[in-house]
Amino acid sequence: MSDTIKIIFFGDIVGKPGRFALRDFLSENRAKYDFVVANVENASHGFGLTEKNYNDFIEYGVNAMTSGNHIWDKKEIFNYIENASCLIRPLNYPKDTPGVGYRIIDCDKFKVGVINVLGRVFMNIIDSPWDMIKDVINEIKKETPIVILDFHAEATAEKICFGKYCSDLGLSAFFGTHTHVQTADESIIAGMAYISDVGFCGASDGVIGMDYNTSLSRFLTALPERYEVAEGEVSQINALEVDIDINTGKALNVKRVLCSNSKVEGSGDED
Image (tube, rainbow, N blue to C red; front, side, top):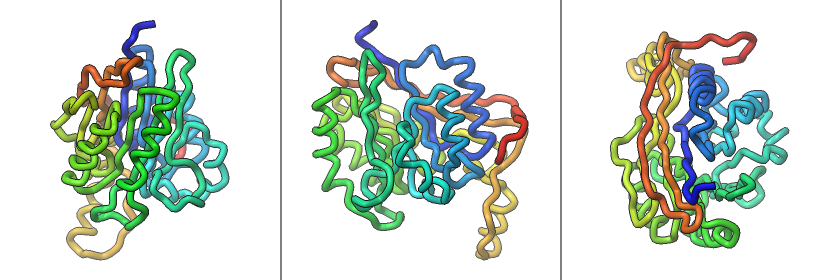
């Protein structure tokens, strides 16, 4: 095996269009990647993750699934999260919260530590990630030098600052998520791959994956209205590819992925 592995991280998967776009992309490209990660907190009708969709992602070839503030929106999550060995909820929820905030995924010839963290600026206030991230990275590094992180946050400044802090701690790759708009600031900082936001996978003809008309109504009236997942003829894939040295854990190359495909219908699948 080469001393380098190629990881791909998919931005927030939004509803059925996002799931099917991911499915179709991996059906053609899965062999190119040694490790696949996707943020799945919006995967089931835009909010949360059903157990069925969790199992679907495993079938598509996803090794690890990160999440965010919407991971609890489908209440069935509490029935299966403790047994979902590929799923990671944000690290900085209180200690008795179901699930785990990081995992070490064993791929036989290498291991990857995957951490999920929530930001706190313009988000619900939870435990400070600044107080715990060093210990978690050091704990993972006892088993593997490859450590990646999904920082699910609203504010770009918080992402940049936390990213630089994590680069000093020896992180391999930092993937920003939550805003659903892919940023053009991919770079390597002190051996760590970085991007402020990976973007999203889903219908292109909406508002960050949601239906335009319901989004517009909320802005025009300021009244609460249930978001619906956008439909359309085109779905998009936003992702980031990272090449990592398996001996040092350092990122060697980083490349944004932005592509689209015709909408593919499924049969018997929930939104």
